[in-house]
Image (tube, rainbow, N blue to C red; front, top):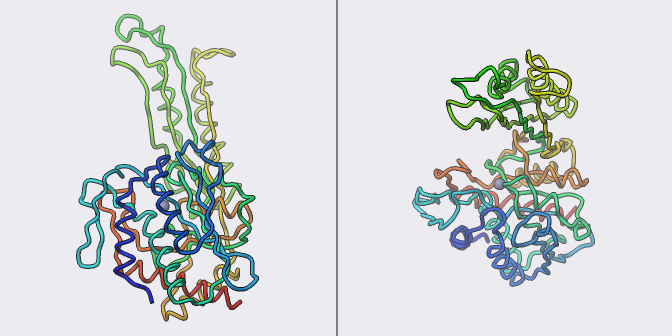
Length: 378
Ligand SMILES: [Zn+2]
């Protein structure tokens, strides 16, 4: 039996341990103890060297009954800022922060749900399949933990990440994304006495941006310029401006096309400057960073079927969802591990208004237990 009180206590203990990205070590050590007490074999991978975290990803194995390949279950350990000194408050079944920090339900509600499911398995002695649990670092800063996971430690071919809101949903599609950084370089000059010696990097960037369409480009493609930094003072013609943006699409062809279109806009604005001659100012440096790659789980895949069957057993609907953002599931998918994303109830994440309803966590825990049962019997 799921013990809601035990789960909420465990959740509140987890959020009280600070674990902003790259500082997951204390939480990881705590979690390792909890998992070993539940019967897991645990190991840390060597990803800390690549991610800059104070710990590697934590992998926990439960042998289970039956000779199926293990099922993957995963959550990330890190949180965004402001995520230090979190004081969780439980009121009428809803857990919030005190309003000065995030809550950390993203993704510690998932960790608490997984711990509760394992607790239920241990105390009830119910048979379960072999499990591989991955608790990743640095998800919030570009899925770095998952991207640097030591795959030789993983043998699961399918599973679930718990890292979205709707406890009656399963995310089966997520986009690819590119991050773009444009650095426009002009020439500085005194804005009052010798402006003709200057080339305004801000003006060149503005001319490029004015030709772009931003926002939702079609049903499966979006693009955004989110940061502009440049210039030093009102009396100086600005030499450098940096513009950061992103493109996302469920179609990799469109992703490449829109990325190229944005690059062309900046290069054209620089090239058409009246002072520009071969190899001279203004120029644009473009840095394209592939952030994550799409996932697309077919509707008849076992990962979907098992979630559907679990929801049916619980007499509730399951909606198959398309995400606008990436998660560790994108990285698992690229490694050939079919990974759906289950909801935990986390709401208004990445804000000080973040909360989670205990009822939703219970629902998510029921889903996990049913899925394990269904996989075990398959
Ligand atoms: Zn998350």
